[in-house]
Length: 83
Image (cartoon, rainbow, N blue to C red; front, side, top):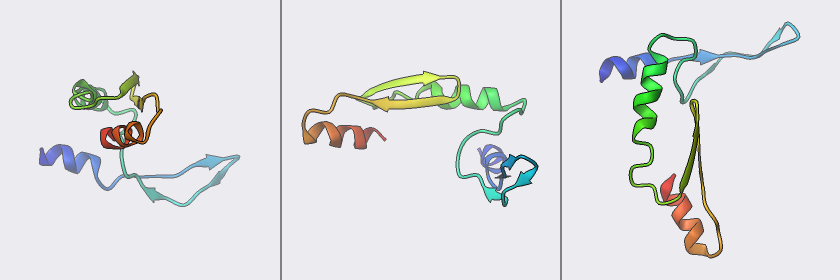
């Protein structure tokens, strides 16, 4: 697991718009795009994403959203607990 942790830590990114670059910032989450192992790591990550989650989950590619109907304060608490 240390290899996986090392592979995901210490990554940086920046944005380019009209030949102007932002400053480099450290990436806090996610799997490296365009890598050979990235597709396998995301499959491992999302495989059990729903474990212990009461709310609904929508998954598409490498994105996930937790949602649910909020009628009472307890519904808000449940959504927050699922995060």
